[in-house]
Length: 72
Image (cartoon, rainbow, N blue to C red; front, side):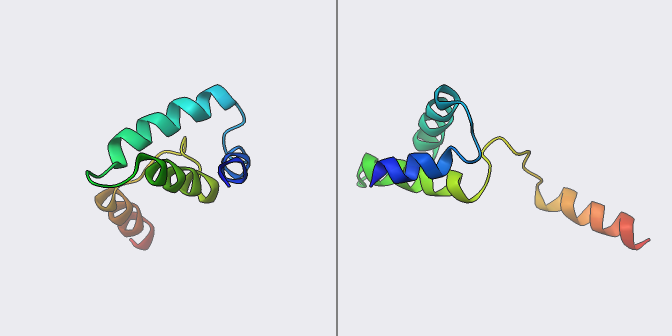
């Protein structure tokens, strides 16, 4: 059910308004043509349940540079 997905996503985002804003932005970016919007929204909420949407994203080249700095 969608309510279970929302409560799971609230583990990382405590403010419901912020959750709605982030979910709508992510749904717009991840939506594929010829798929249901509801399925895309559910997929976004599942992703929010597993990881924080507000966490900074580290790209692969930056992660490789960090690893090289530690090794040197």
